[in-house]
Length: 194
Image (cartoon, rainbow, N blue to C red; front, top):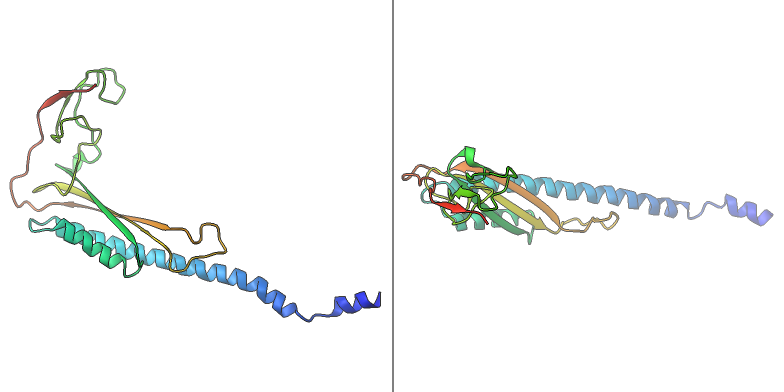
């Protein structure tokens, strides 16, 4: 009984045990804070670079490959080894964003099918539920520029589930190309959906 009382009063090693419990919580918070900071800073850098690249690409002399390469270079300064992919979809007008090509929806199902006729407004030979075309478009076209970034965190957190997994960020910009020439008109050829 005396040995048990002596054992219960012995506080040697308490500091090490308390430190072990506290450091895990502290490191989780610290690494989480660093990770969120890197993510917020990368998102800020990405958004600014996407706006700048979209603006540069909207000019007649704009080089989309150069703009995309510049974004990759800028983002990799804060997220080393980041995988950066960019895409552009162009529209004739702001009202066309997300709009399907005109068609005769006889069965009112919201899809061009069963021989319904359509107008091939974007000129690609098929009915599309979004009239936009891939690429930077031409003079006076509206372009949605989207950049996706995936990267491994600089401060992975082994104490949290998914704390070391790849991070994903997206930024987009909408610009209207400069009126450096006459804008192409809508296509007017007709087709029939299967």
